[in-house]
Image 1 (cartoon, protein in one colour):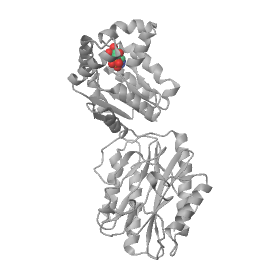
Image 2 (cartoon, rainbow, N blue to C red):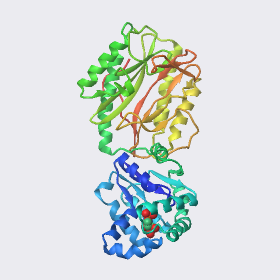
Image 3 (cartoon, protein in one colour):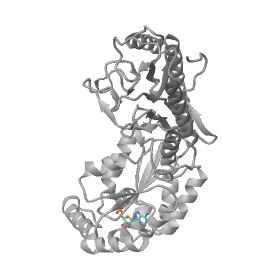
Length: 439
Ligand code: AMP
């Protein structure tokens, strides 16, 4: 689910991007210009009423537009979200939209402000006029539309800036480049039923980690743990998400001691005093959950114990920020503070992420940063929160296998992760252990 609004002058490419966004996120493209053109073409009463205004590049009266949008957003297909393009264009329309959304308990996730110089937009429209024969692409109508944009619509940028996530988009670039930037700013929200499905995947993840905790003993190889996990996940009807992901060869990641993440299970046999980070992802019924736990194998050093506790505290601090109304970087900041407070370092090149329909969704969630930045968090967002920390420096190295990553200075590393949903009642951990207790 995502409710998206496109703002910007004519010729900025909102129509093209609106269609791409709609296809990508499976939501309708609600484009007022298209709706009016259809009405004019079909010669409906509305079409006849608006045609002279349309042709002259003037604005259709607010009450007509508001009624049109109210009806459109009430349609079934808009329940899963929409990308609104061409409305609102005036302050009364913006206020009416806010009220409409409030009535149905929705809010805009993101408002994209397309930025383009008038001259570039004008040239684009004149070029389009030659190809498409839009009756409002005459030079006079184009100028009138641009004038009205600056007079009536541009003030809405400030209006939306004070209300939520306004993202500026430099629109004088190739279509795919603009679209990539848009994709990176859209965080898909899950409906309650989808979160329940993620929770079922999360239960399998938690049970897998509990099982591995019981078996992670001196002498056991990481490959044996991988086989155990693979079999268990499949016995529960899930599939190990990692297997085959960008060619990854195993079902879990098993990263001992100074290895931070992405250790490929193999012949390494666990030793007394090791710590072992295990990362598990499960896909079940179309949804993914992801969690990691760092196990102490036998008796570990005091430093290792402190590191594991510190990483868990950092994870808890991050999860605590997963609340409606917080900003994304509040999570990052809390994790960094909790980690550094204890004299440990956050690995900066590895980040948490959105998760749900796929393992890696937007946004990226760094484990460091200033608070109060980035998108506002909203109900239904689902994140994999995962501090990756070391007892030494923050630098890491990639091994020759092109997967495993270790601390550059050889210091011990820890990694704890949960999949968390943001709910009206606060953070809900979807990968919390249910039955067995881990070692
Ligand atoms: P567009 O295709 O979005 O550029 O819209 C074409 C024309 O439709 C505009 O120039 C207006 O005449 C009319 N129109 C579209 N949306 C609105 C709106 N929200 N308010 C008033 N007029 C609109």
